[in-house]
Every structure is written in structure tokens, then in C-alpha cells.
Length: 161
Image (tube, rainbow, N blue to C red):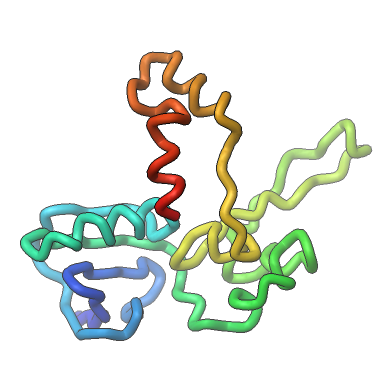
């Protein structure tokens, strides 16, 4: 089977659920036999990492994403369609369509657990809002022995967003 892909700089992108995919439509590439880096997940973190790694032209990067590109559909590009405003994502191809178990405190109701199933991951269905945790969340990670994961160390990276 011949697989046609679109490449952005030195990043080859594969959507696991389709034979061909598109990422920024810049130049055509094909899937190779080996890569310097393989990133599983084309969400915010995966694509940010791919961008950083591919800024060095000597690196070859392959990104695998289970979801499809959003193709600039209004439902993704217009913030009013985010799940909290209209229930847009649940039940669509942009969501993994996960639900909670019945919640006793909600009289047995189940709750949609929206998680993006598209290139861009959950940032595809978040109304274009950037959010980060409280400083104490990150400081707790550092307190567990994860040096460099405290809020002060991460803040410069948050500011790059």
C-alpha cells in the first residue's frame, strides 16, 4: 500500500485512522523506514515537541495521531462551539466520547469527559483558551523529587505560549 502524507518542515505526520493526512499542506513527504524521534500524540504537547525538535533541520520527526485534522471547520475555529457553551464535542469525531461512571452525587447521572480526538488533541475543543494549573500543583511535583518541575522553573515556558 502506498501512503501519501503531507509534511511540515522536517516533521512527517500520520493520522492512524486514515491513509492520507494533512498538516499545514506545505510539502509532500512519505513515511520512511526510520526517524530520529517518534512522538505518539499530536496534541498540544506532542506538536510543540515536534516543532521544537524539527527546528534542527538534521532531526527527522514522526508524529502519530489517532484523530483527524479539523480542516478549519467552524465548529472548531469559533470559540462559542466549545463543549461548555453548546455541548459541541461530545458525540462528534472530535471527541473520544468517554463518560464517567454514574455519579452518586448527581443522582446517578453520567458526565461527558471531553477529550479531543483530533490533530491538536483537547486544544481542538477548548474554545481557544490557554490554562495552566495553580503554582502549588507544580511545586507538589517538584516536592516528590521531580527537579525542574516547580512552578518557578516552568513559568518561562508558560510565558512562551
